[in-house]
Each structure stands twice: as C-alpha cells, then as structure tokens.
Amino acid sequence: MPVIGTAGHVDHGKSTLIQALTGRDPDRWEEEKRRGLTIDLGFAWTTLPDGTDVSFVDVPGHQRFIKNMLAGIEAVDVALLVIAADEGWMPQSEEHLAVLDLLDVRHGVVAVTKADRADDDLLELVMLDAADQLRGTSLEDAPIIPVSAPEGLGIGRLLDELTRQVAAATASFDDPGRPRMWVDRAFTIAGSGTVVTGTLLDGPLAVDDRLMVWPGETEARVRSLQSHEESLQRVEPHRRVAANLVGLDKREIPRGSMLGLPNAWMPSDRILVDLRAARYVDELGPKGAYHLHVGSGAYPVRLQPLGDGGAILRLDRPIPFAVGDRFVLREVGRRAVVGGGRVLDPSPHRQETWQVLRSVVDASPDEQATALLELRGRDDLARLAAHTRGGTPADAVTDGTVAVARRVIPDLQARLRNVVSVYHEQFPLRDGIPKATAAETLSLPAGVVEAIARGTDVLDQGAVLALASFSTAVDEEAATRIVDALESSGLTVPRVRELEASDELIHALVRAGRLVRISDDFVYSAAQVEQIIAGVRAMAAPFTVSEFRERFGISRKYAVPLLEWLDRTGVTIRRGDQRTVR
Image (cartoon, rainbow, N blue to C red; front, side, top):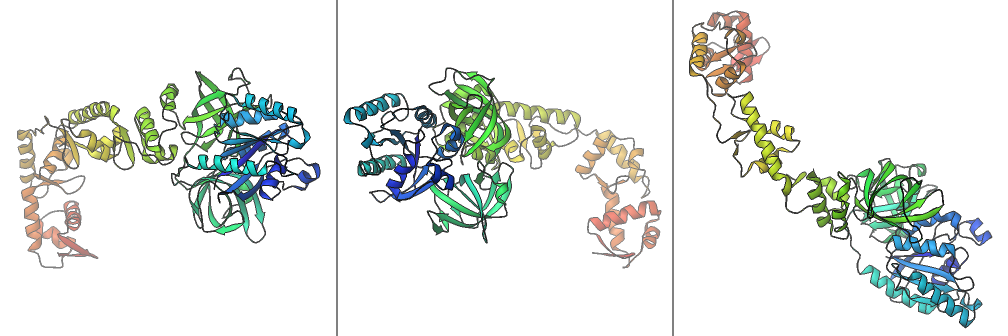
C-alpha cells in the first residue's frame, strides 16, 4: 500500500485537500483545528479510482515545524506538492521541494490549490512559475493541476493523476524480507499498553514477531497489528501500521526509533555518505551544527567533507543503516535544510572508497554486499547482510559465518604459510600447527583457513596443518636413551624432568606411541604399560590401592597416578576404595 505525502508552504491548503480526497480530516490535535494550522503529522487513507488503497501523510508547512515535516516525508512513495494560487511559490515551497529532491522522490503531482481565488491569467502564471521551479529537480516532470477543494474543482483529475503516479511508483517496489519501521507516534491505550505507528518500509511484520528497538536495543513482542483501522495478523511493506507492543513503555520508544528483527540490523555511529547540497546552498563545511534526519528521527552529527560529494558523518549514538538509505541534513543555526544524500557504507573502514561504492548504491543487495566485501577484505556474513538489507557476497571464500574476498586470498595464503613455518621452527617434533591455533592467529574461522590452504603447499592433515616439505626428525639416539632409562628402572621410573629430555621430544614420543603419559610427572614406555595392563587383568577383583602396590612392588607415589590413568582409559572401574577390571 503506497504512501502519498504532502509538501508545501503553510496555509496553502494541504490538509483541506487531503480531506477532499479522502473524506478524512488529517489534523488530530484540538489546537490544529482551532488554529487551522497543521502542527504535527496527520494521516488519512482512501481507495484510488483503479482500486488501489493508499495512505496519506500530511506534513506541517510552517517553518517552525520543519522537524515534524521531515519525520513524515522519508517513507513517501508519491509526493503531493501543494501551491496556493493566490500566493504562489513561497519559502517553504522551496524548502519542501528541496527535501523531496534530496530524497530523490521521482513520482508526484503538483496541486495548485485555491484556484477559485485567482483569475485565469494569475493561475497560468503560478503554474508556469511552478514548472520553472521544478526544473532540474527529481519532480521536474510532475504534472501541475489546478484544484479548489471546497468546490471539488479538479479533484477527479487529481485523483486520476495520483493513480498514474502510484502505479509507476509501485512498479519498482522490492522487499528483502527484513521488517523495518521508523516510529512516528507512540502512545498508550488503556488495557492494551504501548502502541506505535509508522510506515513499514520492508516486511512483512506479523503478530508475535520478536522485535528490537534502536537506539537502545531493547526488545518487544508484537501483540496485535492494525492498518487503516483493520486488525491484521500480517502486514506487508509500504503500509501504514499501528503495532501494539508487549514489553515496552511508550517512553522507551519515542519518535525516531526504529523497529526491526533482532540480529537483522547493526547500528553504527559513523557512516560514509554521498552528500549533495540543497540547490540554494553553495557549500557544506565541517563547522556547522547539523542534524541528520533519517527515517522519522533527527540526530546530531559532525560533518567531515571528503571532496566531490563524499563525506563522513559521525553521530552521537549508533543507529542502524543500510547501503542506499536516504537522509536529509539540516543546519541547526540557520534552521534550514541544507543537504541530503545516501548512505554508501554504514561502517566504513576506509573513507577514500566512497567513489567505488557510489556505483553500486542502486544495485541489488547481493551486489552491494559483494562490493563492501571487496573493500573490507573480510567480514561477517551477518554484518554484510545487515548493511545491505539481506545481501550475500558473490565469489567469496566462506565457512557460513565469515566471508573473505578473493583479492585478499594470496595475502592470507602467504600469512598462513608463514604461521605454519614459524610453528615448525618452534616445535620441530610436532606434526604441525593445530587448525584452531592457525585460525586464532589469522583471526579467521577454521573452515576459512582450510579453504585458504587449498592449492598451496600447506597440507591439511586433519587436526593440524603442515608444510608439504616438513617432516618430524626425532633424535633416535636420545629416544632410545629415554626408553632405556625408563625400562631399566622397573616401574619406579624417574620423573619426566629427571629424564634430561626436552618437552618436545617427550611429546613427539608420546604422539608416536613409544611413550605413554600417565600424569604430568610420569611417562612409561609402551612395553611397560602393556606389562601393567596385563598384570592388572590377572589380579583378583575387586582390589585396593594397597593390593595394587603389593602386586607391582611400587609406592603410593606411583600407584595412585597409574590407577587414575587406568580409570581414565577404561581399563579399570573404581567403586569407592576398590577397583575392578572392565
């Protein structure tokens, strides 16, 4: 269900025109009705001549309420720019057109209201001036239609033209399946709790969905949904929605908050953007006090121009962004909209990459994810998806959680080879570096490390990685000396530290099966262990530690570690102070 949004100078008849089009008064506040002045966002809906249901968002035209206007204009699919025939083009006409142009709203109609108050010559001059003002903007081809709401003059023609514009706008709708809604109202209903309203940009959204609220990352559940006063179990994108939320107070979700699925969006307080100045602004510099208007929210930002339209914006709090998000920049000091543009990278690593990203800002989510990964080198797939409304990079090495761009594979392969080589030098008697150790060193998942190793001289040997040219070289003379020292001692073997052998040699002989490590202090030769196991199996069961000591002629210092090893390896089973052979 597309959204039509009004724009135009104060008292040019926007609300009156919507009432004529829909039969509903969009002004909600008593003060608005008393003063005849729209202060906050208003909402209405109707069915167009072709049967299409549409929502209307009515925005205030007074310069004092420009922030409220900006909170409602972002979700607009079709613009209804209103100019009064008896006043013509005015300051807020210009500023509102600038907002629509900066947001690249390309479908719209210009309604010249109060046509009954102007003679034919004046009406023609106002329409010609409007056409001239539209030139060079996103709405330069918008039809211009004179109307008079009280008399119904031109209302039928305006509805027909809105129908054509809505059809053109909806032809390009797409839905990545990640619900996203910026909150423009939050209130409490007795017996129901917190209700929020907004336009669902992406979807769908369903009853019982678990949602996250940004900023703040608090959670809530959807108890019920309404659209145009109709209760629904599921709402599709591009509809005005009222969501009754469980688990939140209305103070926790003010205007400007964003609703989305948990883990589907990732906030950032620094974004790379393609920035364009409003047509009445010469240049945007870093010294101004700016507010970034995105969705229905307004956030203080610091501007760092990069030249030729690129810029870095730094926010005072992290907000979820995706590539292609449109925004408006307002300078607080002069109280005016001064620029706008699109997000190129929600979390830039290098600010000089903005020219590259400009070429994919209108591409598919997958193409955007591919471009981001190419620039970042590596990234979490969940993060890439959050930054591109669900995109998955192509031609990447991935283990299902992390993706690595092909361009960085040669460098990672060289680093991997160096890591393995250094490990061989440090531990020449080990078969290779454990995959987990290599993965931690490279800050990559083991699955990606395995993929990087393919096609190189780094061999995957199951639990370890080793260079093809590497082989362990045990000092056979030293190994024989160790085994002889153990076996010549009977079962009262010397401690490991008394064997005068390096830890690496001991580890190598254990891995080769020539030694068996019983405890931190003791190792035995394979032959000694076979002797012990055979002797235990010949003992009458059950037996005690004392009986075990007597059978093998050893002290408790040796008996206890041996029995604990026999328990661990399943040779014996301990029950209290006695053991039996399994």
